[in-house]
Amino acid sequence: MVNCLYTIKEFKLNCSDTQVHHPYYFAIADYNNTLVCYWDLSYKASQLSIWDLETGEHKRDFELAQAHEFGLGKNGKVCVVNFQDFVWKLDIETQELIGNHANNIMSISMSNPRCFAICSTQTLFVVGNSVGNRGEFEVWNYETYSRHLHHQFEGVGLTAQGTSFSSSKPEALIDQLTPFLFTPDGKILVVTFKKPNKRKLQIWDLETGELLQTLDDLPISIMNALAISADGNIFACGTRESQVCVWELISDKILYQSTEVSPCLMSADGRILIHCTKEFEIVVWDLVENQERCKLSGHTAPIVYITMSSDRQFIASYSLDRSIKIWGLF
Image (cartoon, rainbow, N blue to C red):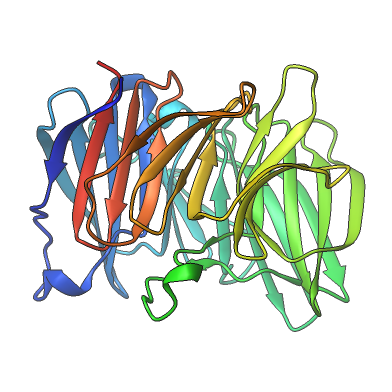
């Protein structure tokens, strides 16, 4: 049975008007069972807030002076920050830069990247940029400060990155957009390009740096997460034609669909799907048994973020009612 363990409504943000800010990143750090919430407060000010999932205790806040993009690195023990064309990594416990003074900040070769994603299991991140129908992306190892992959493209553009908090169209709320997704094992990168009324995907092998496959003229969809099944198939979950769907990436065969709304996510093995309803509930669905495990209610506005610990013991959600709920299997 999943119960709501704690509801968090007080956020100590270092800004003049706290009510206008929502998180720009929301994730669980598995190694110490904490919830990490990143707030982009202004052009040169941002803040990280951390809570203990087991107790609901607010552990700490710390400020990041210059930060645009943020994400948890391998196992959640480090966070990686990108500002313009500089990237640095911080110890999530000590809040200190990792590395010595000479090399703890790395400069990437791309100027002002607009898209950013981090692998949760390997020390990799990807940055990209496109102007019109041309651009480039790069995969870097933030431990060795080495570039792992560089690719330039023409004729397409990367899908826009960002999070929309507009409530004018509740049925389309909320789209967390990113053109880059890593598979849970960190071996594959999937890149999404936009075309008129269509999408194009590239699937890259990050161990060899080779392009494995290009999937062209796909239906417009928003991918929120990838999973790998026991037989090695790559599953994607997201929104297609205003419906939550799970599909097999290569064949584009739809395995599950619901008339409910995003956001949604899957467990790494592709068994458990979590998505939201128009009544601001969270549905936990077993894709193997094809049945609902449970439904979680308590939010009073559309849900913006949901995240789940890798052991499936905790779920956390953030809603436009400006509350965080921590759910637990106790």
